[in-house]
Length: 157
Image (cartoon, rainbow, N blue to C red):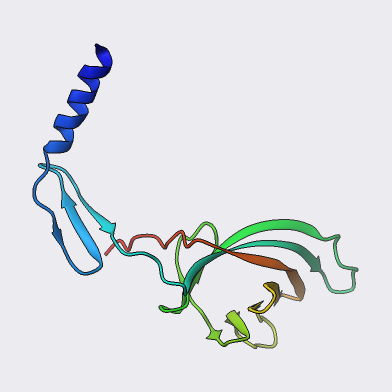
């Protein structure tokens, strides 16, 4: 009997909504006296995907041997159509530096003292990232596999 009462309450709560307006890519749903919620109603394209990466990270300080490799797991979110990407926490998206048939360059500054460079080779999924900050060299390498796109955060404004 309790299950029937709960189901009835849930049904009535679901019926307490206003009409839905939509655009070609988003639908705005408004509950009576409640917040507006933006819902994406389109499927990701083949150029929107996640990469599940297994890498090993090493760091070397000037005059020292490199630290032992540390295994890392990370998920990268990429949208090649928009030219944007982010890492697993995805607090903000960043522009992709370059896209070609052979590789995706996520970042590359090419400077002398600070040079983050992150490249993913499209033919085999090889991941390479190098940076130097204040004389400390970071190197990360491994492989990535394609996974369904988990999306980007909803813009605040």
